[in-house]
Length: 226
Ligand code: ADP
Ligand code: ADP
Image (cartoon, rainbow, N blue to C red; front, side, top):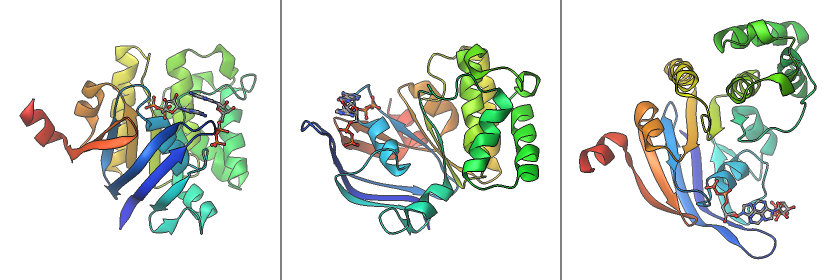
C-alpha cells in the first residue's frame, strides 16, 4: 500500500493562477521522501491539499488507502503536518500547544500528557514547557510544531521546509530526530529547497517546478549523475 497516492492533481487559485498542473506522485509506506523545488514551485500547495488545508481543483489523493474526498477524517487521522508558518496560539505555553492539539483529536488527557512529555523531551523542549510560544526562538518553534504534529501518532509526517532559517547545530539535531522517527516506522515527506537536506535525510525525491513533477528518482541515482 502507498502512504500517499496522488493522481492528476491540479490547483487553480481564485484569480486563475494554476499552481499545480496534473501532479502524479506515489510515496511508499516507510519512505523518507523529499519534495524539492524552487520557491513558487507548488510545494506548499501540494502538501496543503494533502493535509486538507487547501481545496484541490481536480485529481485524486489517497493516504494509506483512504480517499481524501470519501474519507477526509480518515485521511486527517493518518497525517501530522508541520507547517512553515505558525501565527496561532502565540500566548500559549509550550505544553498547552501540544495538549490542545491532542484535545482536537480526542486523545484522553492522561495519554496526551505522557506523549507531550515524551516528545518535548526528545525535542529538547521539556525545560521550556511553561514558556509562551511567542518567547521561543525560530528553531524551538519548529521543534514544538513537530511535537504538536506527532501527538496523535500519525503514520505519515509531512513537514514544510522544516529547517529553513534554523542554525546548523539545531538543524542537525532535528535531522537525527527525524531519522530515528522514520526508523521506527513513520513515513516522512518533507519539502525543501536545500539539496543538502534531501541528501542527508531522504531515500527518494521528486523535483517539482512550475506546478509539475520534473523528476522522480532515488537520491542515490540523482547524486550519481551530478
Ligand atoms: P482556496 O481556493 O484554497 O480557498 P484562495 O484562492 O481562497 O484559496 O486563497 C486563500 C488566500 O490566500 C486568499 O485570501 C488569497 O488572497 C491569498 N493569496 C492570494 N495570492 C496569494 C499568493 N500568491 N500567495 C499566498 N497567498 C495568496
Ligand atoms: P512553494 O511552496 O513551492 O514555494 P506555493 O505552493 O507556495 O509554492 O506557491 C505556488 C504558486 O502559487 C506561487 O506562484 C504562489 O504565488 C501561488 N499561490 C500560493 N498560494 C496562493 C493563493 N492562496 N492564491 C493565489 N496564488 C497562490
